[in-house]
Image 1 (cartoon, one colour):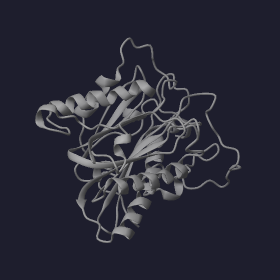
Image 2 (cartoon, rainbow, N blue to C red):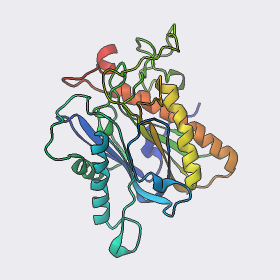
Image 3 (cartoon, rainbow, N blue to C red):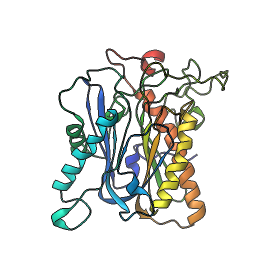
Image 4 (cartoon, helix red, strand yellow):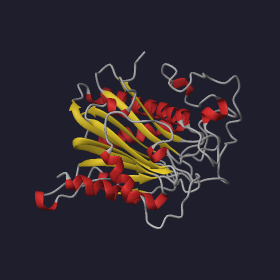
Length: 330
């Protein structure tokens, strides 16, 4: 059986780092993926209510082919300002597109709606620019899962959401990783739980080893939080393979299967479900067609695992609108 990388995090892809910041009083946060050098990126949006920054730039026919960082944030449209804080700090470090005197860091971002996830939301000044800068300052190879970063205020129909990640090393030698902030309209657990929809893809008990339930609910009757909270699950899949923007976009598209395997329902009209695809370009594809197929499939499986890991790791906080998985099931 294939195994995760040494951390079982997206940072098992060599060269990538992740930074996070959160404000527990506001109950929100920011997660940043970056690298020492620009990397290729694409994006695919399948939810009906997305919130994004600079995603048009990631189309394969656009001039700029690489980015300096990718940002996931809470805060709905307010959270788009997190990318401004990241861009400011990257520019101060000399990063960006263009000549030295006018460098412009390329920082696409996506947001989720956590404004009903508890915490104080009556701020006098948008906090997300500062949270974005703090997240980039904290970037490194290790980071925490659960109630962290962009997953801090996440909820689902049944339990708290959270920040999740997972990785795998393929027979080709390529590494694939996923990073996700879970804030879904649907549910990550089957019926009343505690089993996860992602259970068939679990590796080494990474989200509790609960296995499959003895019975399944009627699949035509989805469990949702439509009357309770805001939504949207946003994520990143990454690899060390040499991919162009079109191939990164294809990998991001395939990774949405991971949403559907781990969250029921997913891609609803009230979710802004989005996945970025990223490639550092360190390891060529020896067999372009079968290798790309394997990367795309691995991205979807890693994403399903990452979703369950984020929910499993979420911790209870005062005033939570729904219980944490660990508090509910122990």
